[in-house]
Length: 131
Image 1 (cartoon, rainbow, N blue to C red):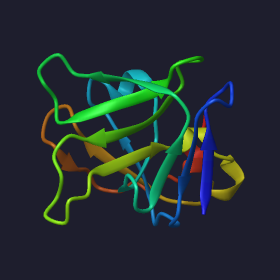
Image 2 (tube, rainbow, N blue to C red; image 1 turned 180 degrees about the vertical axis):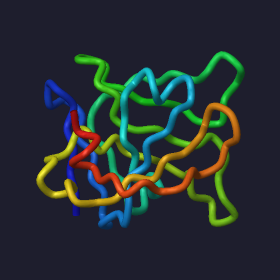
Image 3 (cartoon, helix red, strand yellow; image 1 turned 180 degrees about the horizontal axis):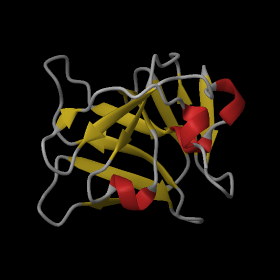
């Protein structure tokens, strides 16, 4: 299990699975937040504790980005539409966890700006993206 906390410690997330990779997205929101994502489903393998506020893109967007109501750290996002099992796709911001535990995981680059496709892998890991 992995755990992440916002800067002030008021929001904590738990991911009950070890990701195989971490995603860096270049969409207009993710590039501004500087996040690295790992995925699951809220209430299943992802659990969040603490008070958050959320933001939805002004174009209506399919996901709600959550951040700590106190320190404004981006903690996770939750999809707005349930899958066929009634689960909501969720991503946690891996920059809020201990980097040592995930440093060797490969980075998936997702082009959320233009093509909405995964880009070819370039061999970089979380360690390469941390700074």
